[in-house]
Amino acid sequence: MLESYLNILVVFALVFTGYWLSVKKWFNNQAIDLFSKLVLNLALPFNMFLNMTERFTKAEFLHLFTGMLLPMVSMLATFAVGYLYAKLTKVPKSRLGVFLTMFTASNTIFMGLPINLAIFGEVSVPYVLLYHICNTVFFWTIGIYLISGDSKDPTIDRVKMDFVGVMRLLLSPAMIGFIVGLVWLLLELPRFELLTKFARHLSNLTTPLSMFVIGMIMFQTGLRNLKMTKDTFGILLGRYVISPLIVILLSFVIQVPEMMLKVFIIQSAMPAQNTMLMLARRYQADVEFTTTTQTLTLIVYLFIIPILIFLVI
Image 1 (cartoon, rainbow, N blue to C red):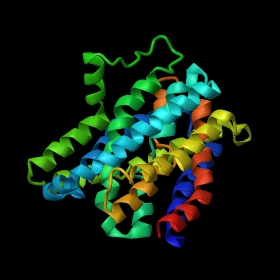
Image 2 (image 1 turned 180 degrees about the vertical axis):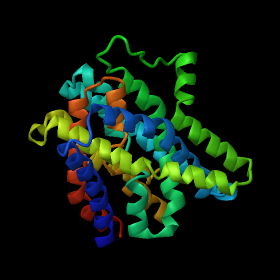
Image 3 (image 1 turned 60 degrees about the vertical axis):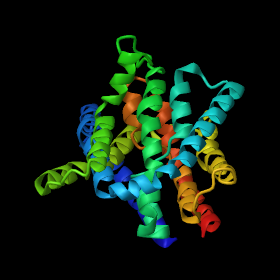
């Protein structure tokens, strides 16, 4: 448990660094835009590629492929519950996309992987990545479509679910990295050491720059403006109660090995995706709400992780 806490504190330390350097006037709006572009268009695609090619073998992937059914169905069910909650509580249309995406998608790799490693060890890695694949496909297709729908700027092109719109989603840098990695894995193409080193250097930028952006936007928003609203509470409820509960309930119907189920429960109850803020800013969605909610999902997670560990161990 102590190691899990230390992993979370490292994430907080990176966020605080971004916040403190903003206080010291090192970072401004231009830095936020620059870091966001670096993460979304360069670091994250290589991160996706390496996660597929380095942590799976083809045989392992095909053997575990059927295990994706549980996280896929659980995310769709969580999304449905989130949509119902949004309608019942009258979540404003201007933040509906952000709300549903944060309600459904979790931080499965930047926090999920180290937390699961701390709790279960290396045996958890394939299961972590199975959930991550489902989470990735949802977030970078349906999630981006929903977030773009919140845009307040008429000059920004909203994603459409027609042929061109779907192709744009599939050809986003993150999805290209994921798809290339998947094809590379399935074709069992050789790994080139120089390419791998280059990709790893860029991939390693993803977490620190993402956390810096969160800290920078927190500074601009102001910690005093972090307020618990019914919409933020709804996302916390979705992340830490509804999502893991749905996984547990579905496990009675879609049976999976015990260790796989434990990892899925942990993965389903992670904070919101760390790239949410960058995408909300890119599409001119409700950045203030996204910042507040992203920050509170991180803070509340400090109190949630001991409960999760108690449930799965």
